[in-house]
Length: 114
Image 1 (cartoon, one colour):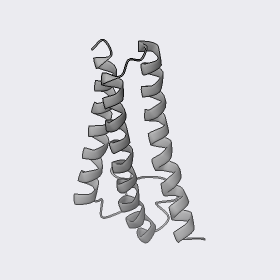
Image 2 (cartoon, one colour; image 1 turned 60 degrees about the horizontal axis):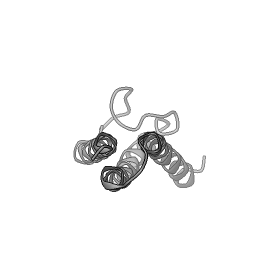
Image 3 (cartoon, helix red, strand yellow; image 1 turned 90 degrees about the vertical axis):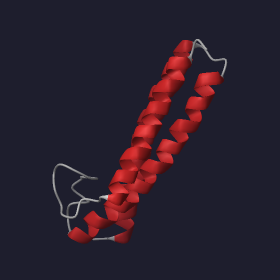
Image 4 (cartoon, helix red, strand yellow; image 1 turned 60 degrees about the vertical axis):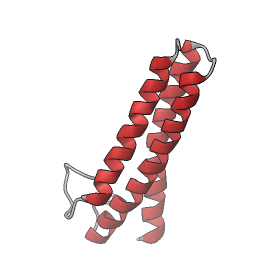
């Protein structure tokens, strides 16, 4: 259980991702704003884009949260070196954020070509 804290960090991030995504799905930002929601220049170009981006990014965040949660189990109970666990955890967190951003931006551009 030496690596318990490594699994906990990934687990906590996964739970936060899933929780934030569920909140976004239940209480999406109604109007374009700079404080709450998936906020990029692409998503703010129109209300229709905004609404689409909020829902799409929330589902991608749930997917990323599930992956983080599953990986946390392996980090928690796997026999891996502490340094490798830290690198894997940080890399996965960064990859999760990139996944959400790139998938959402790509979907916005595909759905709204101009």
